[in-house]
Length: 277
Image (tube, rainbow, N blue to C red; front, top):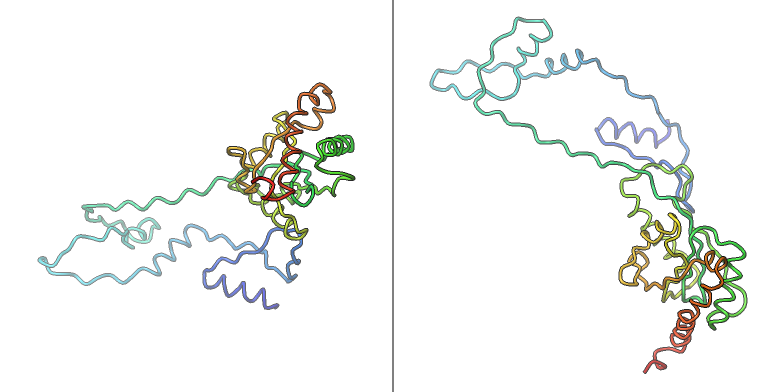
């Protein structure tokens, strides 16, 4: 018997529930393989459970004098249980003056299915995080590159694209707080990427209006309040979806003043605090 199996047997004997991971997290070491005992415990018939109660019942008390008789215990007498089993004739129990109702059991949290969405991420100049709902297409990448070059934000090729998919596992288990867990997952992904790649994030560019259900769900995950993403703890700029701009050339001309202002802010922040004095 391996040490892990022995440990689980000891914990089970002490009444301590042992927990084991149900799936492997990304970049996590695999769980040590061992012989798990998945044999379900045998169910005890109700009659045997009652018999166990009788065996563990305390011995009957000595008869007390009339002036020492106290109120009967609210617990059920073993004799009445034996009567239910047909072992002895029922004995009338004295009435209980005050019955204490058991404390209500806590209602278990209802489970729900996790949110499912994909998010394309790229960091511009190690400073601005550009987010796009779904998997960004080559046409959308080319349009974004043209917009950033025209606004004097990004020259040359776009940075590498990272695809964030939630949930991280294909067959994810049910969760209690789908929205909160998605926010924590996205925050951990961005913070981990920034730490590994040396990003100094200043702002989020969100290219996606409320055109699809996926865009609405990601907007809720970002938890935007007063142009600030509470999930990523960064200010956020909302622009049109790149797919919508491709299909509507007129929208490009209408959006150019806002994009021009965005480019000016990039140049101001790039020069440092002294340029804003």
